[in-house]
Amino acid sequence: MNPRRIERLLRIRRIGETEATRELGERIAQLNAAETQRDQLETFQQEYLAASMPEDPNTLKWLAGMRQKLREALEQQALRIQAAESQVESARAQWLEHHRDCKSLEKLLERVRAEEERHQARRRQVEQDMWATRQAYAREPDGRADGENWQGS
Image (cartoon, rainbow, N blue to C red):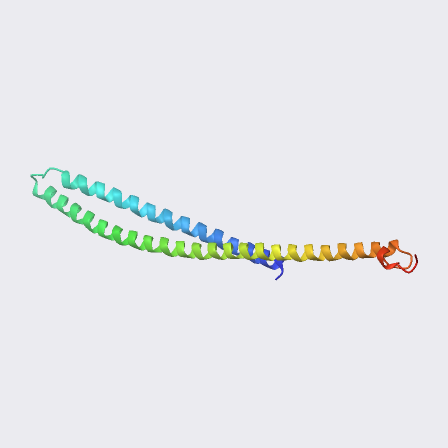
C-alpha cells in the first residue's frame, strides 16, 4: 500500500476528528450551561421555599404561583439536561470513532513504512553484494578469484 495515500487519508480523518472534538466541546458546554441554569433555579426555589409566609392573600397566591412555576421550570430543565447528556454521549461516540480511525491509520502507516524500510534495506544489501562480487571479479584479469587459478601455478 502506498504510504502517501495513507497519509492523505490520515489527514482527512484527522480533520474529521478535529471537527468531532469541536462538536463534543460544544455539547459539553451546552450541558454545563443547562446544569448551571438548573442550579440557579434550585437556588431560587430554595429562596422561595425559605421565604416567610405573607399575611396578604394576594402575595400568598403570588408566592404559591412562583413556587409552582419554579417546580415546572426545574422539571423542564431536567429534561433539557437529559437531552444534553444524550447529545454529549452521541458526540463522544462520534469522536471516539474518529479517534480510533486515526489511531488505526497511524499504526497502518507505521507498518507500511517499516515494511518499505525493510524492503529498501534488502535492496541495498543486494546492491552491495552485487557490487562486492563485481569488485572481486574485476581484480582478476581472467575473471576468477584467487582460489580458482590453481592451474596457472
